[in-house]
Length: 177
Picture 1: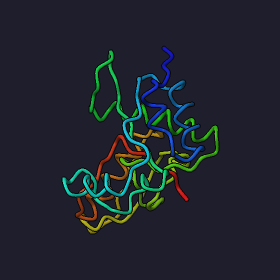
Picture 2: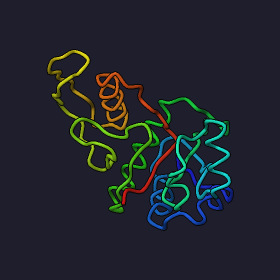
Picture 3: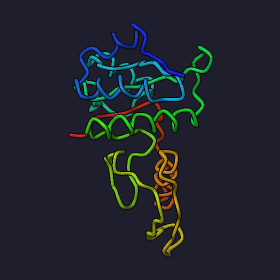
């Protein structure tokens, strides 16, 4: 099934870096899951409000520079926050980013032991990864698939092995400088 961006989504891309806009416009044609753009450019006032209510962690958001966007998955026309849908959407965004040569970091796979933050999703290939686990005090070997779900799981494992909580922001994508 082929999807297209709504007028509202296109409006929310205004002010966003043109390369990111191109990625979103291509990804909607590649995805198996419909999506819309829910956030693009933000004002400082909007960002302050989001930080105050805990919906954002920083005043240094790339949304303020037009270098980030957030999406919403839709199933049968209804919005969904089911994380597995965002893995699939990230696969489509990765494919578009590869085809267009645009470096993008995904908010559910900020980095891995081999590719620290910010991790360019175009470079994620999965495979066997061996790294030192602080938590286990030993080397650990894990095999991850080449999907973005695999990248997210590698990020989660990394954070847990560091005794740190993973910060998963599945709808968020940002341009790497």
